[in-house]
Length: 163
Image 1: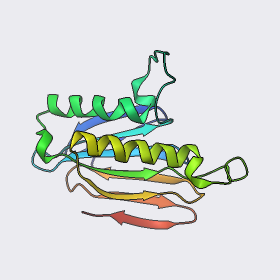
Image 2 (image 1 turned 135 degrees about the vertical axis):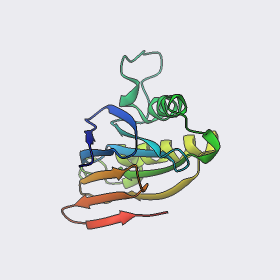
Image 3 (image 1 turned 30 degrees about the vertical axis):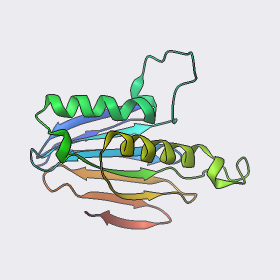
């Protein structure tokens, strides 16, 4: 039986195959998947916000897109991952409170996704797939043996994000 490691809100996990990483209830939060197919090691972060407030130090770097990606890359390299083989997928970033943010581009979800795209591009990590936006929650299952990412949602059905 494949061990499943759960990733809670503002947490991240890195692991090796044959483990499966899972996170539940992504709304405006962003799930960030990083994977090295050569070593079959990967990470999953369940980030809450794009970045900490300026001038404020946060004790939990996995809470933010801007700090979780770098931390996951470091942890993956400690497990033997090669930076040039690592790819990314992002999931979530919904606009769950449309009445508060009538412009979807200004909502937390959109800002989370935009922050991830910009940071991954700056770091040279290819973003191979994304399932973001909308106004519904998602659950993610990441199989480290195959690299497949399965996304389940009440409204969006079930889909596998492939390479």
